[in-house]
Amino acid sequence: MERPLSPFMFPIWYRFQITSALSILHRLTGIALAVGSILLVWWLITVAAGGELFATAHTFLVSPIGLVLLFGWSIAFFYHLCNGVRHLAWDAGYGFEIRSASRSGYAVLAATVLLTAMTWLYVFLT
Amino acid sequence: MTKTSSLSDKTALRDEVVPRRVRQFGSARDGLREWRLQRLTAIALIPLSVYFAASILSLATSDRKTAADWLSLPVPALLVILVVLAGITHALIGVRSVILDYVHTRARLLAAELLFRAVAVLLAGAAVLAVLKLFLGH
Image 1 (cartoon, chains in turn orange, green):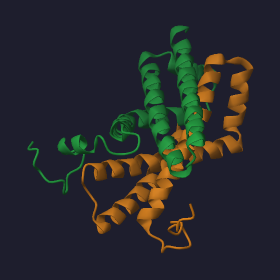
Image 2: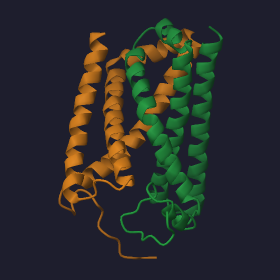
Image 3: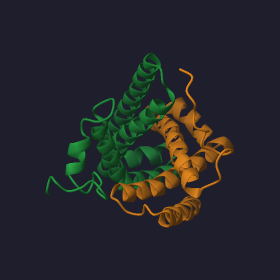
């Protein structure tokens, strides 16, 4: 079954395009969120279990690695949320023109940065 | 809705003729149901996950009593159970579409699918139990 393959989509063979880059990022953040939710469910279980289990989870989450993971989870979350809304608009038949597809892509990136920054400002101020 | 309308600039969300036409396509024969469930959970997750993220990002670094008190309230307990169920369903469909793209051996595909389904069911069950324990046993 040696069939010719089309070149891999990214990043050497094709010119950079915001639309394809964001499409790949949607998938990557989706996987990251799925893995990250294991961490959050684990935290939830330790809250219910209490005792030493919670102490271990708490020490990990407030450590630099834990905070970086939470921060990364929040970026992935806001990106996937905003780009998901973009996908729902496409599903409803809106925004397919190349110009509006790349414009909405940049809007998604801006919204991701803004929402992540606002969230962490809120977390640290309260 | 006329059955004779053309497929141009129609999507499954706008025109019921589209899902009726594509229902039997695809190798699994149930792609449309999955497609719809992914969109349905996506829409549900817009408010649910924003609520969850806003709460969890400050609570995950707080002490146990603050988190346990929060989950003993009915509204947070209900919304966390819903976000877990919708989120894990959404994640499972997404992860499944990724493995369908990269795993081409039938046996490996089946094994991967069973594994991810098992993990999803275990996670969802454990999370729901944890919330119920905090909510009922407070």
